[in-house]
Image 1: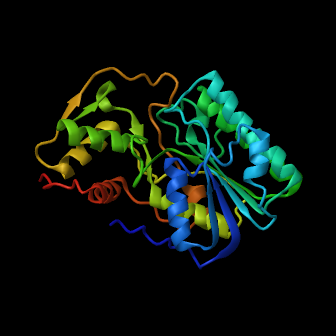
Image 2: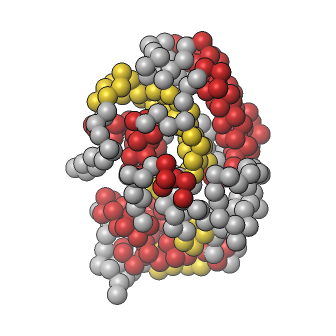
Length: 310
């Protein structure tokens, strides 16, 4: 049975409650499991069945027991993989607005909001992404996240609630079934003996291991961070490079098929690179897992680590 890694923050901390919204999703579910085992205090995971952020009455009933000493982690929302449409954008914004309206009347001690690095839009290959880069979202999902950031930041200013905005790239790790590029590749290798890479595999990505994200959120709660920060490992690799890492660690029988086209990046940045100076200065105790080590942990967790190629 897999054991959840212990969070290593600067010191043990205790809160009355941490309420995780979106606890049925990949990240929310992992946070609920990990925090429940490693954080003193009550950890509550709310799914849309109990607290549907689209409906004010459901928000009021689902969050009726929160107090001004509690922390809310908003991991809920309609992901781009589920839908990237005008309707999903409006729904994501409505969720943030309904939460803000509730917290205007019943404030908490801190809000942590999981946003996306896609708020920056199509960044040129020679530009490193920093927190000072002006957002320029060009898909519905990214627009909804940026508007939600603004709504929550306004709430934080009005009610003096610290707001931690974490702009995330791709996240992978235990429980990401079909939710990450890494899982898609590994699953294809398991089922078909090959990994298919589209657009020549030239797109560059920085993927974050879920365990590192959990540690960062714990640290942000510990210090009540009122900040907007990009979350990344600082390592960008092409999709083809990552596919080769996976194939080499799963065994000699895994092949890679490179398709010259088949996946459009018109509404997403093709090359992503981060300057992590601000994150490292703000959270010096968080060390991110490199993609090679992360893939090895991931494959071992799934029990599919094979005989490594030379």
